[in-house]
Every structure is written in C-alpha cells, then in structure tokens.
Length: 214
Image 1 (tube, rainbow, N blue to C red):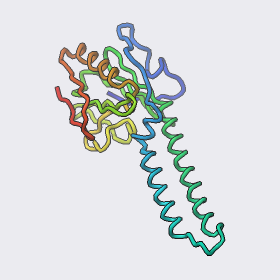
Image 2: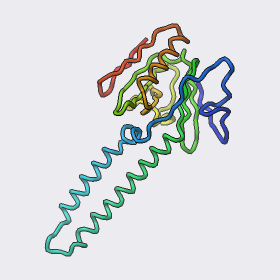
Image 3: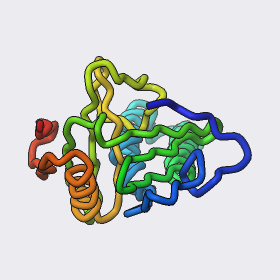
Image 4: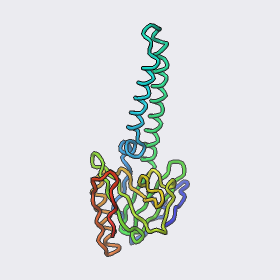
C-alpha cells in the first residue's frame, strides 16, 4: 500500500493508473457532504456551542436602561463571526466531499482524498483484516477498515477519512457514504471472493462499535 500524489491528471477517475483489463469497478462514490459536515466536522455541535455563547453574552451585556446599540451590536458581531465560521466549516465539508472518490473493484479498495494535495490510497483486499459499518441518518454510514499491525497510515494523512479516536492504529474509513448498507455488502462480497474467507460486515448500534474480525 502506498500513497500516490496526484498532480494534474488521473489515468481514470479516482485511480492513480488506468484500470487493468482483468479488474472491474464494482462501485464508486463520494461522501454525502451534509452528513460529512455533521458527523466528521461536527458543525451541528459547533453551532449549538456558538448559540450558547451568544446567549451568555447577551445576558451579560444587556442593560434595559441603555441604548439598544450598546448591547445589541456586540451580540450581532458575535453572531456574524459565528455564521462566518460555520460557513467556512460547511464549505470545507463540501470541498472535501467533492474532491473525494472511493472506488471498490473486484481486487482492491481505492481512496482518492485531499483538497489541495490529492492522495490515493490503494488497499488490496488481502491487506484488509476486517470491516465495520456504522449506520448514520438517511441511509448514510461509515465503513471502517482494519489493517494489519505493520500497515499503518498516518491519521492526519487520512483525516477526515479515518475512524475517530483510533490514533495508534488508524483505520481508513469511507465516511458518510450514501446507501452504506449496499456499499458494505459490495465490499464484503468482493473481499470474500478475493480472499476465500467470509467477511461479515455487521451494522452496530453502539456509538463506537467493535470491529468484526475474521
């Protein structure tokens, strides 16, 4: 497995080289940007935090005997800065979605990620030990991959396409993919055909589900 720096052109969409004749693409897709903003960039939690801070500010500066502009302008300034910050986060999530392409073939999984500097990670099925499906709202989901101990990819090279809090052994993750159950079935079937070992990818209801090992 190696990360390949992409520059101006791709031999094929999402792939560092042209697809070999004996290899078939089974699925390609990108993260749902709204789901990515909520679950990877935590825009909803940040919006709630800003709202609480602005309410606290309003309570502290409000003086009924003073002119409205005295206490209203600081709150409006804070609200404007909060909206600007949230817009930047939403824009980051949108760009991350538009520049990401996940590819499942009958021989490997390929992650093309990166906004400014594009990286492609080739993950042959024989180097994937297990997978985990974390269902999200509206049919989206995260599909995390367990790699052998020696095949480590830097967490910050992957982020946000990495499982949260797995820093010691980062797990590449297909983040917020639409129709995640169908995609996980496609991945599991391809993995099984390539390795001759059944790979159950089981949805977990836990907030931090346990990997299904093979």
